[in-house]
Image (cartoon, rainbow, N blue to C red; front, side, top):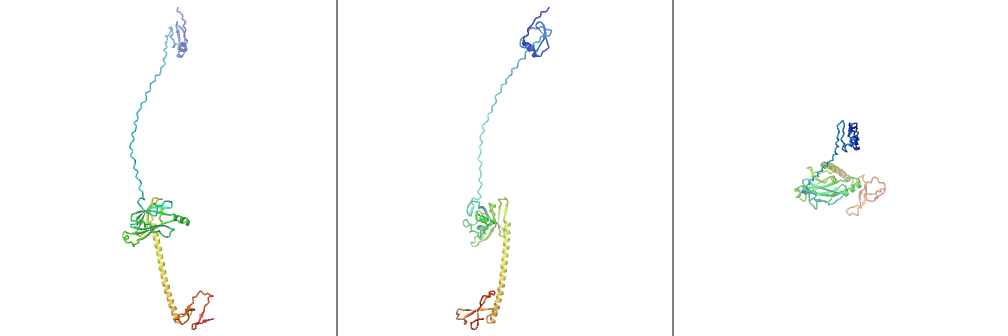
Length: 346
């Protein structure tokens, strides 16, 4: 005969059974008591030791799962890399070559000045001769000035000069007259051989329509035909420019005009000669007529004029031809008897 032992199950064991999920499992505690375990009972079994249970099924001992303690992995200290201090490089200073002054050492033509009316240009003598006279004027001035080379001397071939020209007068006259201002340069040129003769003035040429505002430097050139012209680089177009063709056209026009004047002078001279010959013939004819009729022309009227008591003249009066005045009716003509010199009335 078995004895039944009543066992008291702690509440913790009941809770353990609930959590373990062993619902509906048949368990006999202590004296073989059979019952239905609950999750709470299973949970309670993890907190206290259960008494020996006799059952038709083997007893299950549940071992609580230990809670893992997190292990902290120590962080390694950062490795400091030493940065080397840069050695300053030796920097040699760049030597700036100064831009040469294009005006340095050049003799000056004119008076140095600055302003919006001042043209400042460099001119090179590329004529192959010496420039013995240099003068500049505008188209509103009649005459070229005195030789601008008096103080600096002649300009040798390939020599450069710095010219200052004040255009204030030209600009004022241009505004007042509403005409375009233009500029001219007159040159006196001599070869080296001609330079030996002080009395030889050489030849004079003129550069027309100088575009001072369009260049900083120009060459004065000379053609075999004796025409002077300029070569320069334009500040506006940056192209090489030349006034040669323009100067040739002007020279041709001037030559044609001079030829016409010479022809006109010759024509006038011929006409004058013919007129003199005709008049001479007429005079001779008149003289002959006068000789034939006593020195008086029948168609010519004369007046007696007191000769002032000329002792060599027997008559007290001289007969002077009366010049016709185109039929002036108010003119009074006095006639004298040629023998008595008495006034003839009527």
